[in-house]
Image (cartoon, rainbow, N blue to C red; front, side, top):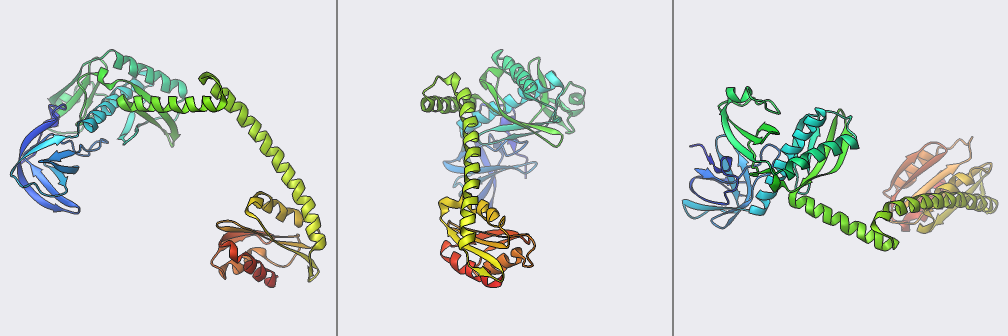
Length: 395
């Protein structure tokens, strides 16, 4: 079959086209249609495929099969001559993100010699992986600032072809190993890269590049970013979030971070105080429970089911009980699912980890632990009493 002429190579702004159907094949979901020419960009090079319609039939995906491009449709078109229409909002968004990536990657290389080793264009954010895990906020902001200066300057973006040998002699940001004619994308005076993706005519159409997040991982730094409309939506969302936070604090926007820090510190202090109170309560309660508990084989057996709102106290109570000599705690906590804590004073011959497993196996739960302390759950709270009774019989 003849090669597919890729119209997007020379005109990324082409929204509609006509083409001849060369072949139709069944696909797993729908059908694959092959054309003599197409403006649909296939999923390739970290950039998702275009979507749109062929003769009004939705195009679900576009696949690069080497010499040809397959269009995945819900059903086959009824004509041999078809009209294609690109989802322009999606295409232009991808052009903004991909051209923005070229500028940002070049900026990282110029400011710190950090090279881009991979690129991914996602549905909400895009990312590049840089060849160093030593980047911090200063390096990120420096590259981001330079990239936006290039955007604000509205530099021309030129797409042209060169023979592979000639291209390899040029100052490419990343070497190319392609043969034949190589498609080059040039940001005037700033970047030159071999690339088959769709791009803007000038950097000004990128609008803005905004780094949203970065993380270090095994010798690399992943930088997540948004451009154009995505940057507008992200900024608008951030402003709405900050405005709502300011309203809840009854404060100015610029005071929100400080108030959050203050409240976080106060919350941590309150939680520490609460934990100490729970520990003291558990100690008092444990003493009372052990004193009134029945004795079995020389040991006090504390068997109790707590309400779900007492979950924070349950584990501390299990530890507090066994501070008493010759004591065992069999504690169940209601919830969905229910939880169990078993503990015993040191020196006993029984193995609570094994006992818990045996008791839970009878009701479909799971758990385990050490000889003197075990925990588990995964059962309905209606079966807690049954489980605790089975465990006590195994002591």
